[in-house]
Image 1 (cartoon, rainbow, N blue to C red):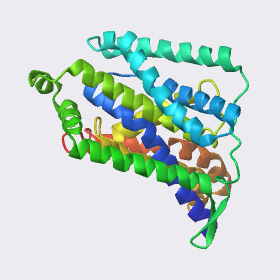
Image 2: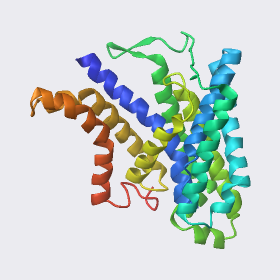
Image 3: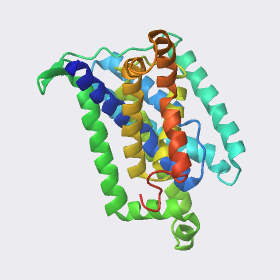
Image 4: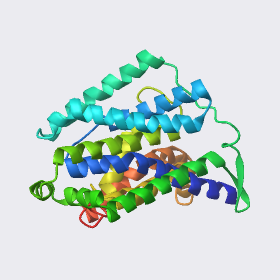
Length: 305
């Protein structure tokens, strides 16, 4: 039982930092640019596919990561420059419809280029082995994901809190008009933010590839979770995105593993078996509703994030 609890908590943290990699860029794009970008999940998917392709061709996971990040960055910048820039002045419905079109486009693109068969990473044993940890064992690659996510979180915090660019991002999240009035090139700032968000999504894609199958449409479910994260954490807040990601990751994983056992303490066995999975899948949305009820602006809104 101790091993199961230990693994479940670490899996929740790992899933949380993975969600953070997706939601960090999304919360900046939504919070600063006021842009609802449903294609963010497609950028995550493209990073996974490019990483998978490079890995299959070279056998080097490090090279797959190194290629996937700048590819996603460039793809995000090109997408923003050629298409999404024209949507900034449009209402959210137009943004949703247009970016949903990009979801369909990218899903069909990977089907045409890579085929309908899911792509799989087969990591070398050097980075994927049972690692002893506090008297238990845990897959080393999942620990790598946790470390990478925490490192990215720390790096983003330093950039946002300690640099001039971070100052502009924080100011833009709370008052875009003021930043423009100060003479800052808003268009360039938007492109940079969008590119960073795309690069983080691509990193998340290539890191999750060895854990989940890489397939067309894989980004949609993660996009929904990312929106849950930014609503809970506070739109435009990196700190809020990080804390909310860990909370959502733990709630999601712990609910899937232990919800039936928890319900058995209060309810008949048959009801627990039936209601447990359903309640577990609803748990993060119940959490989001509770946060919105008590703090509609999120746990850490941008003006304090």
